[in-house]
Amino acid sequence: MEYHPGWLYDKMYSSKDYASEAGYLHRLIQKLHPSAQTLLDLASGTGQHLFHLKHHYRAEGLDLSEKLLETARARNPELAFHQGDMRNFSLSKRFDVITCLFSAIGYAGSPEGLESAIDQMARHLTMGGVLLVEPWFSPDQWNHGQCDITVVDEPELKIARLNTSRQEGRLSILDFHYLVATPQGVSYFTQCYQPYLFTQQEYLGAFEKAGLSVEHDPTGVTGRGLYMGRLEPG
Image (cartoon, rainbow, N blue to C red; front, side, top):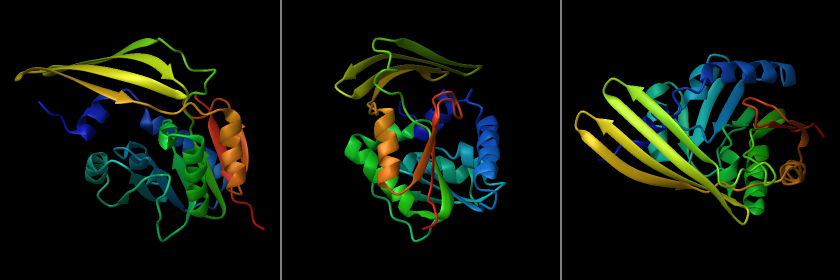
């Protein structure tokens, strides 16, 4: 049985506190850029952060997956969503704030991809605009060999997602194995994700190369840290 990626994504991250995270981001943006009015969320997924941030900003989203965008548009029908790759997207407008959250930047794929992504984000900022990027793990943080399980337990839906973590070069490899039980039966399938393990210096260097001033908060939104860039006048 096939499951819509947006539905599955929301089920697997149903415990994620998007409202609290969006509140944190809004308070941070008000501190960094009090006059900010427009916001673009890159790798916006199913639009859960934007569901809360749209009350404070004229917001839009962009994601590589058209299936995830279907769910995002259904959740936020009044917002504009764009299909595109963070490394080479091009929109005919600029934004006061650009966010790239939940470690999606790891899918830039290489140091060159990271530089391209940050450069494209910088090109879409208004003068004085702020870029907020939540990183994936660095090579020294990655826990090779770790095993994890996530469980969804609803009356007519049971999901068990198990994964192992390994490393090949600078790629972190996440092999996910799913068991999904519904009244119609039990199905099994797998997924594999390979986010890149960037170093702090590679993040900082990409921001600086794109012409942004940059600060690093080691804690950030969820404990993974946060890189905060600004397009300075002049």
